[in-house]
Image (cartoon, rainbow, N blue to C red; front, side, top):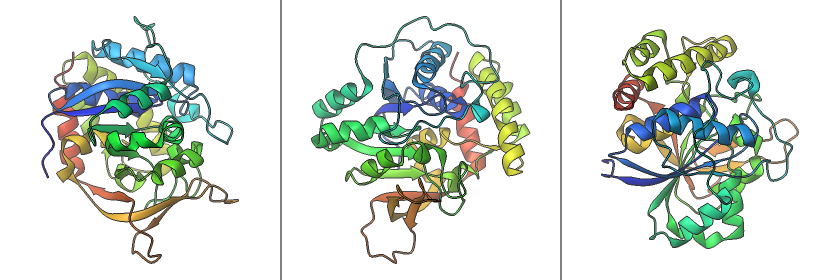
Length: 317
């Protein structure tokens, strides 16, 4: 399957170090991806910081023409859990942050999603979820008919073959708002999942980070600095040869889906477990008979992924 010539996308995000890299990755591929807006949600850090960080990252790429809509400041039901221990107090540890040069777009991210997806041609907009799924869940709950405008929901979420990174069974984006994840997985939208099963195979080794750092442009140096900070915490926690690079896998899938492999499966979200809240329960072998509702990816050609990331970032300022 070949990537489309230019795909219309909304990036829903909680920047976050790897979120910032994913945004830059998408902006470097402007010949293939039409980024209509960035929508922000509370997650890695609170909403005021995720929104500020999105504006800063767009400034790094000289793309402040793309609007940023602030969204939900807390999960649907649970108290907000953040990840400053991994991403730093600002969410973008490892780099100096200037003040944004533009402000947020008027209006709420949920209203933007409802308006945009409601007016879109059938199956024409891809929603990239690289944070907790609160914004899209609220939009789908308020106006279920917007699912008609969604081509795919491509998300970084969950864990199955590889276990959780915030609890023994739960991945962060799902754990922060499991009820929102349950809404999205139950929406009937076409879903592609890039879980920890995949992202833990896309390691930011020293050689890969060096190639990005030495591209000779601002974006490469920034990504290198972020990865040197981000990877160290991941290496210390998981004992790997490099830090997993999570959210950029979503963008790589849009550009080169042939780098990934997986299978269609039924996925449900545990919302009430005493020890398992936020678990993505994947019926990998079809034992329940429940119909598949997602394409669950469990492998990636890591060398080709990093080559694609490097060559795409090379196009940025």
